[in-house]
Image 1: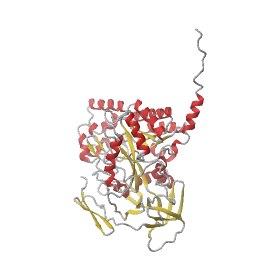
Image 2 (image 1 turned 30 degrees about the horizontal axis):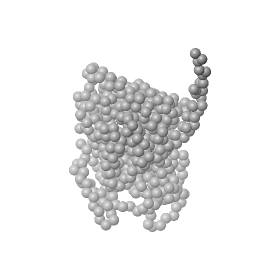
Image 3 (image 1 turned 90 degrees about the horizontal axis):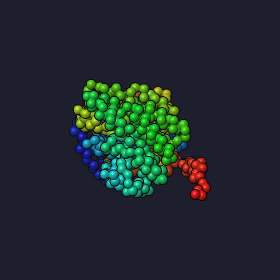
Length: 524
């Protein structure tokens, strides 16, 4: 079971202490006292890595902002110095795809905006972008609800917005979200029939509105109608366990929906972002579109890069059920293909789709796989998994690692170089990774409230030893120093680089029509 804590915040003079009294001994890593650190930091002698360059340098930080990056920076005694010799100093990770405190399938994810973010910081992620779900179709009500949920945040975060219905009110609210609330992306579910799923008519209307606002259209690409039929077929065949989940929504349905979304986005001439690309089928559709010059972004997730579907056939229900997510984790071979696509730039950045349900919640579907809450963990594990799978294997350079875990996300969502870079003026969100140190992932040692972990027992090289968020050391010596209510909402402006030249393509199209044709009127 997930450990529960009693939390006491003591305010003494100018120091804030975060104290947690565990009621279980099953989790060894505990949150520690978090006192206000020095506002001046120097990271000394490390290899500073950005997406296109690396150098041995010092990094000087004041009041949460990077002030200087130079080979040698002299400082006074009032500055806290961190020796990073022999280690990589990189921008903190940005997870583009999470679901914290998400109400779904008759329950809610076990990680809220504090526990999920605390786990993220322990794993080297310093910002994430969560999905706001409208309340009864209302974007404004949904946004206000998520503002309240996020009040306990301990790190920076942004919001995407889901669109689940269409009318003039929703259209107007999309404008408010972009122009006033700092949201620059909208997600459309092509799956979850009867719940979140939308049809092609709504998809087209949404794409057109996104284009006019300079907001990025995102899709969960599975053919929801076909999935529904697949689920019925499995039940008719007596297949009720977790393996039925994978069998009912094969890769061909992900490929079909991805292709359809790509073609509709091309028809509207608006950029498209495909979330959690899990299959060769979907990846190849993205590759073909990008070859033709279409603006399509493909986001694999850590579980798709690291795992295969064999776990869903495990004889123990609890073990098998923890791997249920949508689209499903695919057969062996899809993982390697996604890794190759990421290394070649066919896929651009890595998310997690962190959507954590504990074993009790997963047991809601013990007699019917359709009732198993969909979702796996990853917000804490992503940075280590990508390093181990991609960098340690030689498939990716250190600079490309920074690109796929941080920089490209910041560029896509228009917050670069404030985020995703170690440059003067950037936010001081930084990790220090020791390539010679090792990590091991277990449910007992992770910081999520989850009582299981899909990466259980995974070991690898390359450990994040220090996380700095907003200029504060929040993870060091395997100790987490965080307090609720200290996170910031980061507004993301519209019209990222993906929209560059869209108007020129529209103009070219109009000039190419050779229409309307002027015809002589009949004399009869």
